[in-house]
Image (cartoon, rainbow, N blue to C red):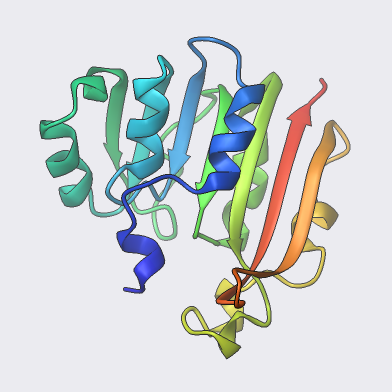
Length: 179
């Protein structure tokens, strides 16, 4: 596991984009890890469903957090089992440091009309800086933008090196479902 997965503070991009969420939004946090985004969003009054294959760290993190009452933890293998939340829609879907291409259509389909997809993960070129290096887990140039369905408006898109000096290559997408 690299340093990105051990962070306890939310990604600055997600913090900035959270201003787009309506009050008391329902949020789905994919591959939630230890819950840095789930707990941060829950502390701001959102109702969060946090999914991960291994929920041990997430359950431990919620023990000391008053906001954990707003977090529903779901243990699920998103890559080898059926989607655990069929037909459920959320005001926001948050994905950070996770890529399973087969899941992308389901993630978009889980966003309610008027809701948002907030996605940030590693992209091709990141292998120069560390893990992940496997191209299966690195977005290709413009990939998130290219797979965005027509019923979404892309509000923000960025890709490239991040950090000063550069320490990773990332791709970021904020999209809103219009219908």
